[in-house]
Image (tube, rainbow, N blue to C red):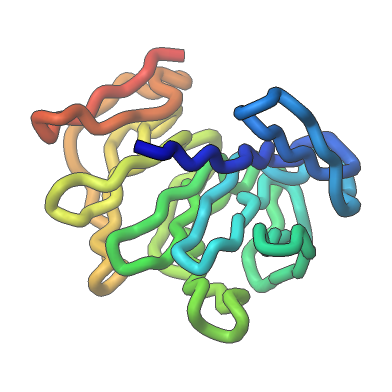
Length: 189
């Protein structure tokens, strides 16, 4: 069977240019211009083939069209130091940024307004509350509790936020993954 090797795009956190790695021959290619200064923390590939970089301290978001490596911008999200860390592609095709220091959730619909349509929803505690997220088999998006003492998940059918459980806080977890049996596992920091 032929194997298709796809390039890897790294999120430019402090870098001033983008990097693409070709895993078939380990070559590195650069593209574009980015602001540097801890701007983006994570990336999500949308079904439209574009990569959305997650705004960490950025005031303007960036989208890379992987067909030609052009960069477009989006705005409308709250600008807070350490606002979001990571993102999740929901079962509805929308991208949900994980609210770390942000007190409001952000979701982007890649199919609306050239993929720059930002919608705010819910309330979050800020203060490094969540890092990482995962889509459960029921379609809900669970955010990994870092300093939060309660878990939160989003129902992407209506963007409602629900709390659950009790967690230790104090940057207890950093990231999550879904196991084949449907259980979620969190990484200790």
